[in-house]
Image 1 (tube, rainbow, N blue to C red):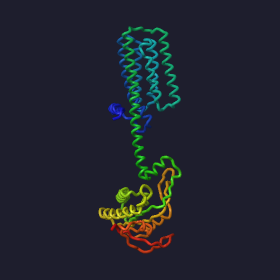
Image 2 (cartoon, rainbow, N blue to C red):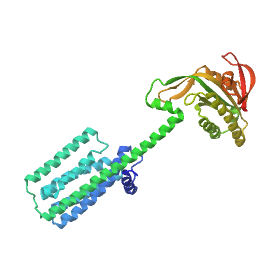
Image 3 (cartoon, helix red, strand yellow):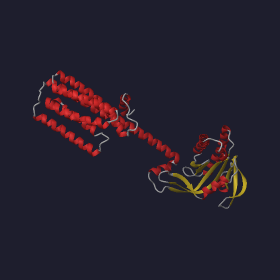
Image 4 (tube, rainbow, N blue to C red):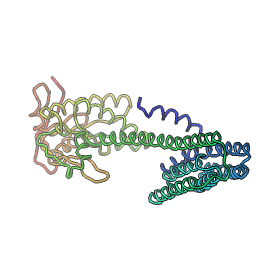
Length: 411
């Protein structure tokens, strides 16, 4: 457990008892709202305590002023709870006025001039005032505190009291001031811890999303701002899979049913892709594109794609039986050279280009439903343990006539 954990746990219990900031508040306003939920009630109670003390000591002017102070802090709590933080903050002008009055009456050693430090601390955290003004106000308040203290050094108090009363005043003021400043720091620290946790959570989510879109190596290079992000691969295998009969089926299904059906199938394909060390490139409608040989061990890319294709064929059979759908799966594979890279600045994507991609796509589109059609180039890279059957030569649009084979399984 980190050192911040006890503060977080204590703060969590305290904050659970306080009203939450309005939902439309930005983070800096929400932090300041929490601070106000602590300091205004403490200030209200402290002034009630000082009123009782001054009244008991027959300090009538200070007791009367504390009645005004209690009213001011009650107004501040009311306005703050309504979300009017600016009005609540303005009431803090009472603190330096009160500090000056009490110091003039009771002198330096009563310690009332120290209360201005509280206003300095709060002012530096105010979100609705620009930073230069906040710093300037903090400096002015600090100079005011020093001036009040200097006045008390060179002037006798209007109402001298005994050393015991001075000690009591000083102790009380230090306790009140410490309580308020600790409340400010703790509430701000809790807000920072929560913000850091939320930021880390969002970073993890963003990282996870990035790795769902891009290969890990590509994601690392993208974060390093490498441009352009492109690679040439001399020997990879590309697979396309497409559903025959999907268009007719989609007319009979609702949008949610259709999406759930595709999500079920492609999730099965995603697991197989990861298991066989392949890289999912993208889905295009009801088509699925994947490649091997882009990273890691690339010598067996044809074997990996063949095992993946056979696994997809088996998984599709299970999917079809479980969902009772009249669909068939065409798979096409070709091996060769490609260019891989990331395009786009905002909605970027990782893609492959080259003749190999075009031929692989034609292997699928010109294939036979529920069969895996592979090119001669892919077959030549497969060891003898794979069983293939010649399909014959087919004419591929935009390409020469090619001999193709059907992958039937392992021997």
